[in-house]
Image 1 (cartoon, rainbow, N blue to C red):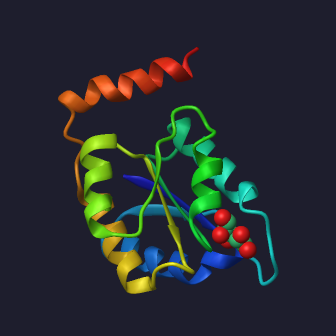
Image 2: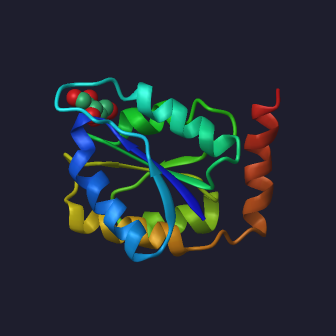
Length: 146
Ligand code: RB5
């Protein structure tokens, strides 16, 4: 599994924590920034990463900003992206099992690096359940195809 990761200036510490998790799990990843010590605009990071996941160049994407909200809003504008904004372990598991989310967004002003690491670990290691959820995802895919 190949992971694309990015943050704005508000998510740098969690981004570094997640990179260390990805190394521990032996997962291949690429860091798309930001290389910033001043304020940047989250869509400049969310949209290119989401496009790389939607195109299949990367299997999953992880985005971090201050709240995770801006990153998730932007990523979900890209067709084929199911970006889940998650700040608890229960939702991290459920969004993989039920939504087959292919991107994860978190907010560094909301949770600390320890919880972010647990959330990402569960999200990366939980499989999609399919079954009754497939019909629901197909309704979203059909809408995107319109
Ligand atoms: C940046 O100040 C902040 O707005 C951004 O990191 C994020 O929280 C947006 O949703």
